[in-house]
Amino acid sequence: MRVLGISFDYHDAAAVLLHDDVIVAACAEERFVRRKHTSEFPREAIAFALARADISIEDVDHVVFYEKPLRKFDRILTSALSGWPRTLPLFVKSMPVWLGRRLHVRRTIQKALGSKRDILFSSHHLSHAASAFLLSPFEEAAILTVDGVGEWATTGWGQGRGNSFELPEEIRFPHSLGLYYSALTSYLGFKVNDAEWKVMGLAPYGEPRFANEFRKLLITHEDGSFKLDMRYFAHVASTKSMINGRYERLFGRARRQPEAALEQFHHDIARSGQLVLEEAMLNLARAVRKRTGMKHLAIGGGVGLNSVANWRIFREAGFDELFIQPAAGDDGGALGAAALVMAELGGVRPQPMRHALLGPEFTDDAIAAALAQRGLKAERLSTEQLVTEVSTRLQRGDIVGWFQGRAEFGPRALGARSILASPAEASMKDRINARVKYREAFRPFAPSVPHEVSHLYFDVPPGIESPFMLLVPPVREEFRTRLPAITHADGSARIQTVREAVNPLYHQLLTAFGEKSGIPVLLNTSFNVRGEPIVNTPAEAIATFERTGLDTLAMGHWLLTAKQGPVDHERGMRESVALEKSP
Image 1 (cartoon, rainbow, N blue to C red):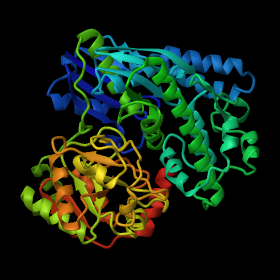
Image 2: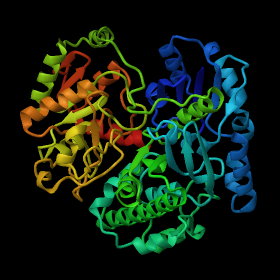
Image 3: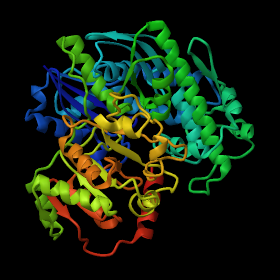
Image 4: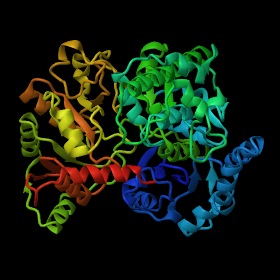
């Protein structure tokens, strides 16, 4: 049986194709249309998925949308009427969109696919739950889904066994950990639904001196539940703001304007708000552990990408192992919806998601054509030569664009569309932020390490995996000075553990670098600049190489080391800032 899962119309539109128990293809639309977090219909992602399987839409047995629009409309309308007349601006803005398009998702999909076939509908949090549990390696597990909001639910929990699961308990809008964190993001002057990572990265520079104020905003209970004090939030009535004046008065300052200087106050706000989120997530996870009695936990939903909170859950909630869906946002909803249909109608549970390498790939010939189109001369090497040359360049301080195999599904670069560098050079963090990524200086970088030796350099139990960069353990104290570029201000690092069986080329590179440097750890960040999606094609990789401070580009077996002209870093920073500000 073949199932096509689709998400769109809010953010992180995506398409996923399952064939029985195999994920044939999974990719977000943003990678093709080059608009970060795009919500538009995933036409290109669907085309890629069908082409990957060498089929047409008529060969697909079921098409499923990741949520239920009528239920979401019920929430929008009920919220607007219950808050009248404060909610008039929200009503005026949202009703034309809903009545004109969003209530007609079935027709939109049918028209776009050129087919009158029936369209199935999952619900938002069931899609998240399916993406977490059904793709996990666990035969049975507790399930926790946490995000901004789906139809009505913002949080759900339950348990799964074999091919089936249930999510009987939920917390409903307007009380939401995702929206709590979005409000914090907004108050700090960052872009909501895009820059939550910045809050998490900024937090270790601060002290939690505002934690009690945040505990007034987010109130937790012994049973794991929580609520927001809605006197401080504006997301029920406003289309423009997450917070109101009362929120600002609580902290004694107005919200920070975008690109304004970051002061210690902002560091402390980030640390305090992050800490209170961690407390709420840990409280919830402990309650789920107690209620279900399960030893394993599967996490889905956008808040599942808060890797600092995940680490605390792993260490403190009482579970033996976690599985966190790497595409935990709405893109992963497409995967979950497809997996749910496959399990319920086909009686088949997908294979465990050991990796996220599910997107497009390009042959050496296709890469050669892209190089020729730009008039560039590159050297073609054997695999062994490539690994030797790249590891040597990394050891001497080169920053390398690494474009290999199938692209990753989800927001993390995991050794397929990555920028790599030595973690041993203290200035490397500033160099990459300023001259390659064109982003803020406080932003940290993650390390990749072979799975089998990860416990030697990071404070993790032997055998524990973090293949999707979703846990943040401490760097072992004796290695912090030797790995300064990936050790964050609090001594932690968001690690990726790499298995040879999953990504043999990347594992080989890590091993070769370790033989030269003494430590098989590489700095790994996404192959993009600020405001752009991760590169998807050789042409995009080449363009990024030429307009940034990348020293080397390794694509397939091709190695490119020379640019056509000088790089204008000031222009790159200006353009990236403008791009991030765009809608």
